Length: 373
Image (cartoon, rainbow, N blue to C red; front, side, top):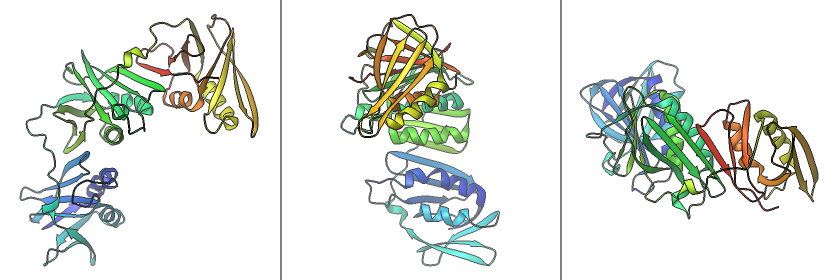
């Protein structure tokens, strides 16, 4: 195999797959290997998989001799990323044991593996891809992935629930049993997105999807094919193995009505939480919030180091005195990903879940379970 390729394009493609290469694989092939396949049409295929997440992409190349090899992807990326030239020549040695990277009068040799052992990559052939606004989907992912559970004994909570509810609207939901994040936006682009049943995209897959969408922007298409979520843009396809489980009835967690409502500055509350949680319990991160007409008082007590007290002004509250305790990090995570000046909190009793959303927007909704005082 021998081909010449633009170094910057090659490095960009190799950087894209590093998250997959770093994961463990159940296959016989090393999980750090990347697949390189050059063909007579002048295309270089770059693939990587851990059997749960797969990248498959193509670059233009000047192919002298077609062929297919696998090579350690992290080292190959590190070598090519530091070369000081625009184009590089890549070929196998006469014994087909080493991959040689050449520029000017310099060369690097990397040990190869047999491509025969490499897992067969998924194919999007015959898959009906639907255009979607990748920027909108990226925001939905970013604002809902914060609640994905890390408890592997409950696989149905280890991902983000993705569903299309008709008229171009896409809804994403995640919950870890202590909090819930829901986003719902019109994400249609060029064509309607038809309604379809929901699927669960796993935590590591959603992380790769976020990076994919960050790179490719609006011009993205997707499909759900058998047990895969497929995202495609340009000459790159991302395949994510779905979680085979039933997502819980998340609608039952969301309070149907709330007796108390208040508006508060998002940044003021976030900054107060950042300061006050320094003296919160390192185990529970519990912050007590006392609410009266016009004021919110935040308190933290830690018998090992001290206590903290902060007071904020609030608007629109007329529900009587209320004392409620939250994990400060759960609330802070929500405030960090929002962008509005003010947020609304909808509350009931001190052990009832609270709803947090941006003032004037129904697109995103967050539920936080209180802690027992």
